[in-house]
Amino acid sequence: METQSIGSPVLWAGFIVFVLLMLALDLGVFHRKTHEVKFKEALTWSGVWISLALVFNLGIWWKFGSMPAMQFLTGYLIEKSLSIDNIFVFVVVFSALKIPALYQHRVLFWGILSALVLRAGMIFAGVAMLERFHWLIYVFGAFLIFTGVKLFLQRNKEEHPEDGAVMKLARRIIPSTARFDGDRFFTRENGRKLATPLLMSLVLVELTDVLFALDSIPAIFAVTTDPFLVFTSNIFAILGLRSLFFVLAGAVEKFSYLKVGLSAVLVFVGAKMALVDVVKVPPALSLGVIALLLGGSIVASLLKARAQERAEADKARTPGQRPAEAAR
Image (cartoon, rainbow, N blue to C red):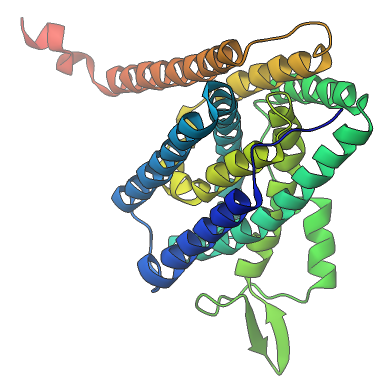
């Protein structure tokens, strides 16, 4: 299967330079001093990253037409929604390791910076394999369906990445301490160089991204195999993940049906990939189905959360304080 790409050397170089400039601006200017990221600041940055992705999408539409633009937008929506699932794990990691809010941005910044490199390698490896072995597309499709079903069945399972085998192995290999030393990843105790909890949380963030990339990258291959579109949609979703974390970190428990929606998306794109030589699903239809599944799960989650809040408020009132009785 021969892969065609809209990405020219100039486009690739320009996009990479843009990403590096944005990262330098983020770390060197706006987050030069360690501080706790507040909701308003995080919401602003989330809006900036989403706006940049949409402007980029409009540029693709203007330069290359509606088909690549639709593929980019669908891929970005998939990656953005799957990245929200990362946030659930990040919240657990920071809570379990007691990482102060003051230092969470630093961990996420370096975690996502290295994730850019890791995902780039995985994307190009995936494209190369699909070019040489077309039958792998059926394997990827079956894997996504399996992952979607597994996610649905384990949607209520609590995550404990800090107690996993990889974390235990990391603690054996890397001498560590439970003591923080400002925003440093390493400190010294009794002449020994030890990893602080920040480094251990970074290890878990990296591991989480690799595991989620195993789902998200095959998922976007169901939309397009253009390496430029796959890479750029992934990168825009990852770059906006840090700010999205601080927007949603305090409210992830309200998205009770999100994993149901994500599992449905994975099953849909997996089936689309597995049946690629039998059924041709138009990009516009794929975008509509994915948006409907995700939007429906988010709306249902918010309605459930609101109903629970009302029920708790009613239960908290004493019989004498009920509005109906107070009006008598």
